[in-house]
Figure 1 (spheres, rainbow, N blue to C red):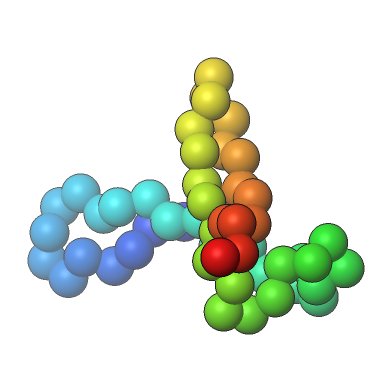
Figure 2 (tube, one colour):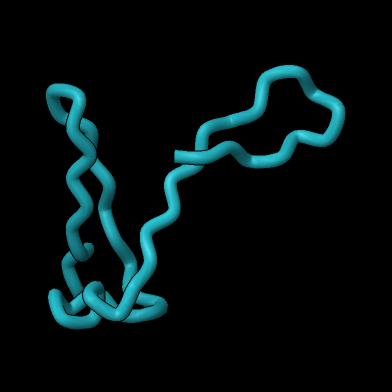
Length: 51
């Protein structure tokens, strides 16, 4: 977890960055749309349906 710089604002926004080649191994590729859900204090990240 980190924070997004806000310049002079006193309360920065939290930021989560996920990166690594392992994402390709589970079929997450650059440019693919994802859906992020929050469920019982968990983040669930899944690929969006292809239309």
